[in-house]
Image (cartoon, rainbow, N blue to C red; front, side):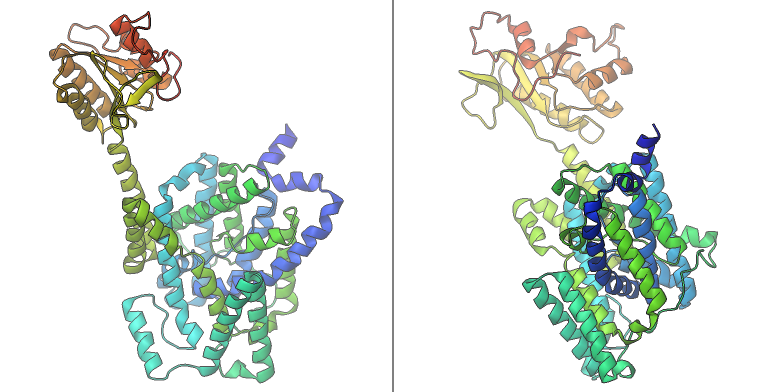
Length: 585
């Protein structure tokens, strides 16, 4: 019992108890490689979020250590993320009013709020909440985030003092500054050189090597050439351990950050869940989404209380640590401890780290968020989904990153309702010599059974499609001009019926009865049948409307009961519907 609880709530402890000695060198080596990326990534994303450099390192150390204990994935790397940085910036900086300490406190509070929401979601088993961001909407949203981050980093890349605003006014201001020659040439050279180095080495070797070479090379160049007085640099880190606490924040700040916290929690978990499942599948493992949500929440709380900000899984650092040979969570622990040693033993090294090089790191990372090819593919094969993706992109770019989250969720829900309210619907018939009942629209050689109309409706029956369902059945009955005595509803695709859908079904039943037509429900799923019985709908004479005589286990059984064809004179389906049969009841 105790061991089962440990495996559920602290998987890392279970791994440590049975840790093979042969893994040591792999995990330690992977942790050393990971550390080389943690410094520039943490500092770069902190600057992109408008926070001091050390906040990015604190936001790395705490989550890595906590997730190593409670996280279900053995190789997932958590930390600051380019997709979250602009959301954090627009959420925190307006409330901070230029006070850096208050900005750090608010960012920590935001991380704790995100963490609490995720922990509660995991405990309530809401791990499937990522459905609120469908793939097309998510692609469009991330395309917008990528553009916002790229534009926001341009001033740092050029050494310009223009406020980095990803807007038409911000772009115009930056263009004017460049036209007036207000560009720091050494910063421009370092920034463009770092950008080129990362891109070239990413193509020749991998992105991790490119980032390491660009950042170390730029730092060494600044130190040797004495450029730290001629271009913007990160500056030395504060020495000592991070302080535990949230600083000067209050309930008004909690209220102001509630909306952003919810949006960040949704986006962070969506990214983390997708990445976790992908790497688990590659290793032949499975991941509990609810456990992943809880672990991500606890990691965010840990980062927030030591001066960090919200984090998610890293799609750039996780592949690096896996390729470096990581076998377990120890690789992340080694990375976190080495990062802490860097803060304690060499905080002054960042005094020579140019901001332009970090801007290049962030811009390359942000560019990986964009997937224009996927959008183009959607526009070609699914124009509606492609249009939704473009709409999500435009929402982020023109309305803002926070408003863009609302737009993205609203578009996802609207797309779901539209899809469910306009499902595929058809009439079924027989093909001589072929078992089953087949779609007449797709099989012109199929024919109808005299006196019968067999209809199928491929969606749950609910408030948004009840009228469409009834109209479809009536159209099938009337459009052929033949006498129909029985309508058989192939109801296997109908997985639910709400009260509005029930009203539509009852009204259809009454309308058909007035025309002398009987309605039979075939292949009704057990839970749907139970729900219809619980509704306890009665006819005018007080009899149960949906008694046992109204149901048939299969379409074939319903046809046989109506036609009396028990000898097989027709090309009988043998009771086999077009799809898998549902058992009676």
